[in-house]
Image 1 (cartoon, rainbow, N blue to C red):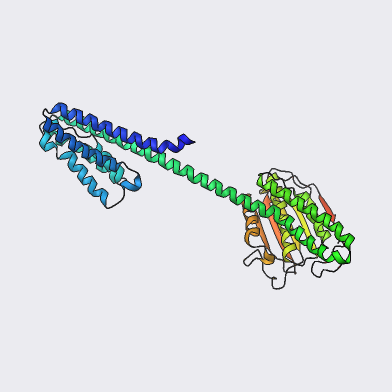
Image 2 (tube, rainbow, N blue to C red; image 1 turned 90 degrees about the vertical axis):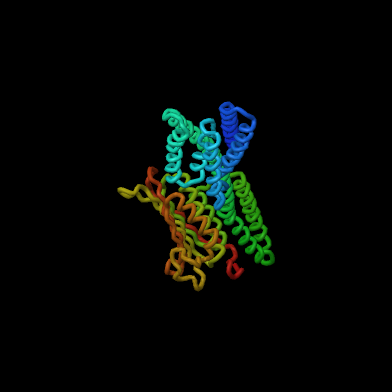
Length: 408
């Protein structure tokens, strides 16, 4: 991983080494073609300036395409490439293809490749103008084309190495963000229910402490069990391990609601559901019940699961969680439109929508028009067993204190 992080730096070092290599070869060739220290010093100075411009044009894309300086640097680069022919004649050997490479690196496509072809073709008449043969002109054109493509190629590889590292960093950042979102969503979906139940149990115990101390003690034991269960779920979320079952969740919530004086009907189709579907539906049940406990005065709740198999659309699981406790002023709000009824907006409904959407399903929530609240979810479960029957679990009210009045 550390080597991958150093790849862009290594690529830039290679760009510099290749450029310096062309520079050294050009200095050596020029000094071999023209005797005299003065000529060598002048040629070396011009080649050094050309190397500096080439390295400038080989910098990162954000730098080399920063206007307004780069068009003028191309003009200077061209002058240092072609004007020395008037002094050195046939003995001048510039850095082959450096100007052509700079044009490819700084000019938008397709103009860059057109200019590249023009510069390469220009070498033939230029060499003929200083008295050389056509063969030498073609050799110069090929030399500039190969040199230009080589210099352009190593710079583009360095660019790609930097782009790859940036993409990896972005993917890592997004993965961290997704994990944070998953943790927050799981913490809300899995632990909100248990903590709400603990709060409601404590509220009931508060009324029982003076009127029925023995009953209060019994309920306190149950509350402690709920608190331990909430702690277990927090640990499961932090460890990234959690398993929810719709059937188990339906019966657990039914028992809780019964203890709070709410009549519960549970009807679950006997069908094998995919694990992700089963878990998502369990979370829907948990959120729906948590919502009913927090934001309504429900006295009856129903949890119903059906699975149907169409001729062309495969099997779909349909879950409905309803209660009769819509608060005053909430009637007529349908399909979970803002503002959300019963306080199911914010992270609660958003989390449910995200989970259902990930599985290609549909969710609606809102007042049912008869004084109740309804959450309906449809999830595809193609390729799994269709229902073989329905198990019905009726429930009767328990004798816990009434949550709205505090009396038995």
